[in-house]
Amino acid sequence: MHSFRQAIAGTEIDVLSDGDGPRLTILHRDTGRAGWTPLHARLAKRFHVVAPSLPGYDSSGRPDWLRNVTGLAALIGMLDDTLGGESGAWLGLGFGGWAAAELAAHSPSRVAKLILHSPMGIKPPEGEIFDQFLIEAEDYVRLGFSSQEAYDRQRAEEGEGRSARLDRNREMTTRIAWKPAMFDLALPHLLRGVSIPSLTVWSSADAIVPRSCAEIYRDALGGHYTEIPGGHMAEYEAPDALAALVEEFLGC
Image 1 (tube, rainbow, N blue to C red):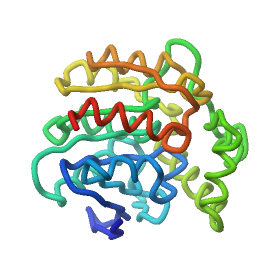
Image 2 (image 1 turned 180 degrees about the vertical axis):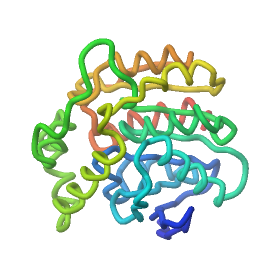
Image 3 (image 1 turned 135 degrees about the horizontal axis):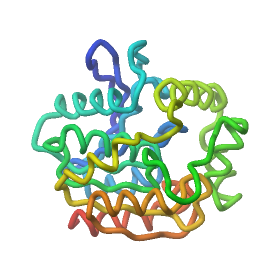
Image 4 (image 1 turned 30 degrees about the vertical axis):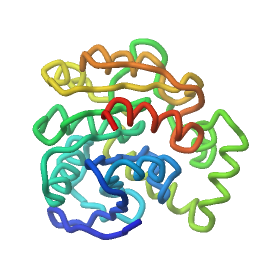
């Protein structure tokens, strides 16, 4: 696994990458990337996986001017350009699904195929995206797991510095996704004009993003839809199930 920092528009983005094959860029949740997850490792066996920390998250630079998810997606698109080659596939997890969808809506030529897992970014017609600022950052992470064992394992693996990282990531989420909270009213309308093969996946025990969000994405994109067991943090609870869907959809 390789780690590097890439300068983009006056800031630096931290990137992890590994594997050979078609490029697959994975965008993390609002809790951050937290290193090389089981999902990254599984997919790197068949793809060249690129896993940036989004601008302002984890150890990536934080531009003072960055105040919305559209701008964040633009920076990630610029990062993709520096990697060269043809447009690749994108996998967006939760909040990262919102960023990937914004990229597809505004720069569709950069996205060959789009996979979204329990994506945020659309106002749900039923239920609501859980307001993480009602509880402590660590409690919000715990809410993302349906399995106590999986949560305990993930927390132990990350180790020292976790609390400071979660607080920094939460602050960045507040900067760019607070008003309105965790959705863009224009996004579902823009996505209806996008002709990109897509797969939307929702976890059946997700306590953070309601099913209706995923269903609106499915309808707006006109793509495939399926569900898997587990909670919001599928990269830890159900990495093999999610990876198998990604591999099948991408034909690998």
